[in-house]
Length: 269
Image (cartoon, rainbow, N blue to C red; front, side, top):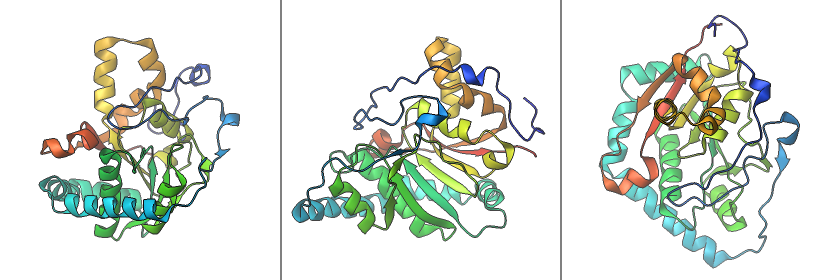
């Protein structure tokens, strides 16, 4: 794979079969993110299935999230993560992605049910705290097909935008974009990479999510053809990836953030 090529080549990329959705662990229910690798089947309109307004329920959820934001903001985990982001190496990596732009948009995929489980609330809280801390993080867009109308309204009240389309991870990074995707399925990361499988787009991406190094290790250890098929773009881009693993520091944040890393893609046009 030549780093100088404008389009990153991947052998037999058209031969990837239909995705299989796995049941996420640690508080994320099965979701209908991924149906097929065929491009004509993505970009599906979406809206919550429950349209009932419940102001008491919304107020209770907002209170839960505000408590979670305060808890996380005061934690050792968060301050260690901030120290990491502000190291010269990582700041340089963020600035390289920003280029001449003043802000990078944040896209949050696969947040799960913020009403039902604490790990998704912690993950959302981290996204919100990072935006508040760093002026170069722009608007936050959120999507998960299991979001309820109540959750969507609370997200909007928190300053986030809920996408009305299930992109299945296939958003083109035409401008600097931080994809915030802790504990998503491998297929979703792979969809994102495939959609941006060009040098100029990959250089616009920062990805916070499952460690690509761990995927490579699992493929090497287990040699599963299913895992290889669902991770082929992850594996192919590894040689061009700078990965910074985070430290969960305490058990309180292990469930929400274990094995998570920042990923930057250094390709030369």
